[in-house]
Length: 511
Image (cartoon, rainbow, N blue to C red):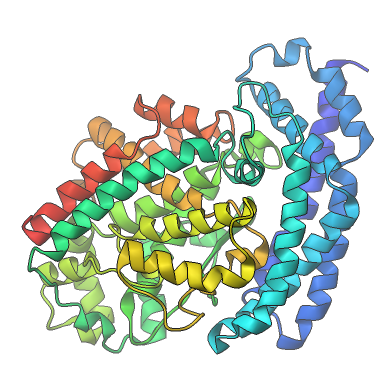
């Protein structure tokens, strides 16, 4: 078989696998938005059956045979060519997939589906003891998978795994390791806590009470749809739906969906949650569609993905220029805002106040929430912390880093859906996304001029086009760290993000 024929077989086979996986994405979306209560048990069995089918395809011996025909051929001589990128990523995915036994894959899929469904019921009831057995099963299975992956060789050019957690982290942020992550996060923590201390003693306390006035859900949805369209989200290729925990999910080209949650007595959650998920969706809609079903048409990492969501939520969506454009429309949608001045609204949506809930945290304190989760995950996988002791350890770190502690489980250790889905190693990508976002945005400003002035005029397309050319169009061609350095000229760092916060909050709090 020629390398060309083998590569064509790979393309056709992997794309068909991607079509099947996209049906799983559709089922997952349905489970978290529309499914009848009594349908969860059947859905868990559906997801297990699909996991078994996908496992068979991802470990098909023909993949190894086709890869062997292409590797070393003229098709992959240029390591940045589409074929070379696809083959590199397919090889790693194939080795990771066939290393994990089918039984473990299927059991994990079934257990995740069951655990996520139980979490949705247990979270509002504060039922930690009921959820704990599910978490034990998820953690045991995830650890078993991590031990298998840890023994595998890493792709050429990537640093070796230093500890078990690295094998999980690598699945979300390729090439990142805990040994690099921890000092980066500690530098960030020091800068954040120094800024937070100055804000606390500044004496300024923005009035945020009007954010808790009545905001009807239908009015929130109507305003959200208006913002989505203005910022460039293709509403003919997506949807906006309510859910318990906001998410974005890509079904395929022309179908990239987002969800949010509305509180009729709190505007921020639905408003900025929608902008956040929109940022994810803009990335998915901007990926090269001709590469769909291959690594070249896939996002490079969750950290880069998060950089796009945090950019639109915060650097765009919380800027003064954005609200100079949209605050008059907000006042039309919400009578509760008609006696509020633009400057007061801008200060309120940028207010800094240590809190318990990650998804509602301000820009200064948000990454401290992530640091808590990273440290707890590392302690769990290093055998330094038992699952039963998570609530106490959670509260202890919240007191130390944020000066607050939960009084219940739903606002503490149970507040995120991630662990019920086995997403250990995922949380650090949120902070990496913030760091990448600041670096990307600064570079965009250098090349495009005053972005906030453009937002003030309702001009979002130049910035969106810039991100699509520099970031989205690359797919998985580069490792995240290499992409950041290629776009901005510098490797990932906490300094641009800290500088951005300093520039923003200095006038807001008269520091």
